[in-house]
Image (cartoon, rainbow, N blue to C red):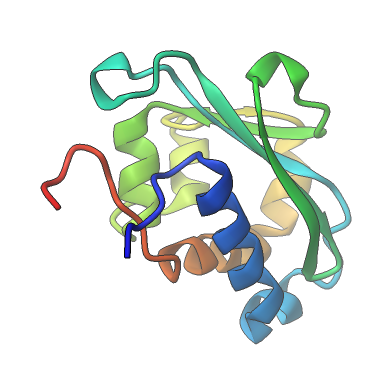
Length: 141
């Protein structure tokens, strides 16, 4: 079985499934009602010729839809942007996403105050991403 690469539709669909079956995320995100987009900066050496975005429609602990699109097409009020190495460290659990935003390792478009009020939901969302088997293109296999 071939594992999905990050920021592809198959990876996004697997993450949506993980979100929708995770009780911890559902509990942590009961008050979160906004779409979120994650943007990966271009990394041609890893097969990402252009920047890519994954936009999640998140509503009270569920993900109603997800799509991969060009960053210029994102409409979500919360957009988090970072290079490949940062996203990889977040997904693997080596970098706390809230701390990365505070340190500006991850760029945020949207209300920092609102995001910080829902830090538990953000961390639970990352835990869902960790549950998705993923092929990182800079690793063998």
